[in-house]
Image (cartoon, rainbow, N blue to C red; front, side, top):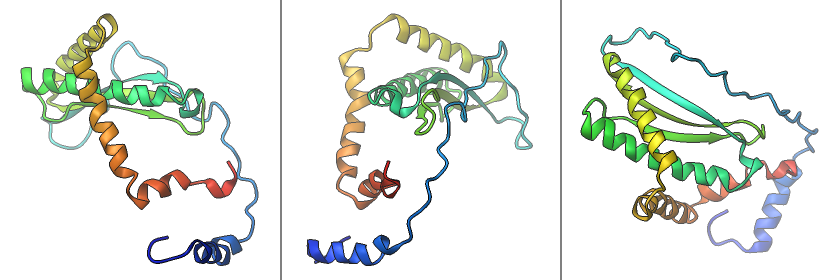
Length: 185
């Protein structure tokens, strides 16, 4: 609600509209296991598209947990994905010059406690797919064996914090937080 509106007017308006809707029956809650991470394979799964023969996408993913299993973990994984993205950009775009679009991200289920993943991908020429997997393996090994430096950590988390602070000034941010509130969850 925006504009020159008093608290009482806002309450009255919501009560007469959303508050007047009939009560919803309890929705079926998804159960643990409705979402699942695919079983690992020794070789990458290969799917063929009908587009240009010189274009491919290479991707790899690792399983994580759902959002509510540990509220800090999805945020930590987002920073990890930012670090992974930057390192892939440095290696695959800057050093190797084989793609403009390497990146990494993360997903944490809001429903299934044991379902989430971190993934890396790049649009890449088909003959460079092996390079993608080798670079990802090298970057991941480096992340496992060496601590992330303070500067690299700040470059990954600083823009995210600034983005959240900027978003908090918009209705879209607050509406997203309120989604599902009427269900009593």
